Amino acid sequence: MSERTRLTTVETVHEDRSWLFTFEDEYGEEDEAILVPCDDGVEAWINRCTHEAQRFDTGRGAAMRDGQIICPKHGSMFDTCSGYCDNGEAADTTLPAVDVAVTDGVVYLTDDDATFLHEGGTDEGDDDDGPTSTSHIGF
Image (tube, rainbow, N blue to C red; front, side):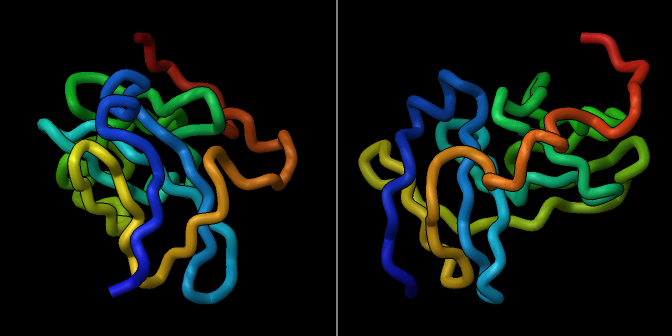
């Protein structure tokens, strides 16, 4: 088992609705993950839609409704607890998980293939601040 790295608290994730962080994967590449509320705890998912790799959270929080993460490009909705999508362009896919654990209300990164780098997104520039196409979704 990998070392546990403290990320944030369950309370913060539930209040903010999502919490973005950057990690280094097993190949030395930077990637992003989001913590999202799930029942009384949290789950962590790679910060990309399975359809076209659209980022859910670009630094302003992920769009969410009724326990689902919403892709800002085509509107596919992923269950926050299972990562499964049953609609839209990403139907019948599941988000890749990042292993976390909760102890006494504190969320820890426990994924053997992920090394925490920092809170927030990658430092690749501002050209990825929103969807690459317009959407007809209204909230």
